[in-house]
Image (cartoon, rainbow, N blue to C red; front, side, top):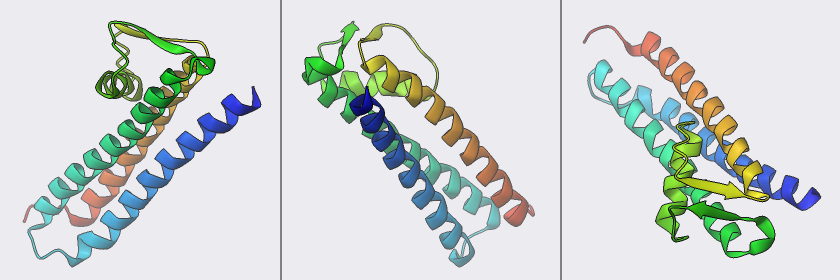
Length: 141
């Protein structure tokens, strides 16, 4: 139980730090750009999407590695256990889409639930961040 908690918290910690660093770097980059203000926002959106994708891949790699070790459980359903299947499953968890064609069994269920919560928090953080950037730079130019 302690190992499951510790590993899950480490994975979430990595995702949160990646997100923080991306948003921090975007904040530093925005004022230096010599482009129209509205394009700064578009660039911010694309960079935020890259951050979310990197975080999803972190979770996907975690599922892949944990799925190989039966002590953590497994992913069942329409999957062959490939890295891309694990990343696809991660996308459905992170975005809270929850398609259901791949199902976690065992301790992987906890990571799937925590990834959904983490995704919700990080997407909300991004929305708040982009709103603040828009109020700073959105002047129609």
